[in-house]
Image 1 (spheres, rainbow, N blue to C red):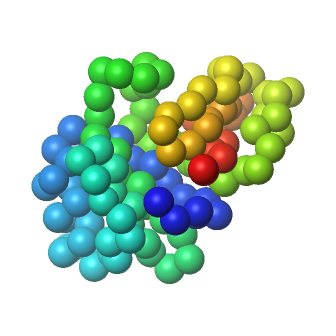
Image 2: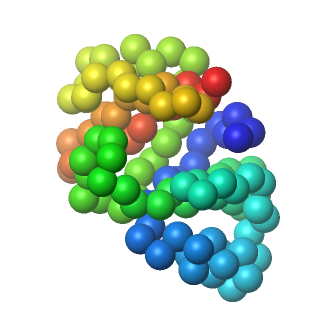
Length: 108
């Protein structure tokens, strides 16, 4: 995956249909895709579609603002979860005062 500066992560249940919708109806650019994630470009930002799964951190909110960060400790003073990792990135989730999730990402 290309190292994005920022974007929106949208968790979807109907992954293939959603990818088709954003590519065809909204004419976003496909940057990369696998069986779980599709990175779509719009202007200088990214829309990351991620197939909902029962694995990983539990979440009910479908939208997550993500920010690429070299230092995941940036959010350590905010209400946050611990740092966790996947095979492609390390993460720290934060919540703003209204309960919206912001994900700091360090891509490998």
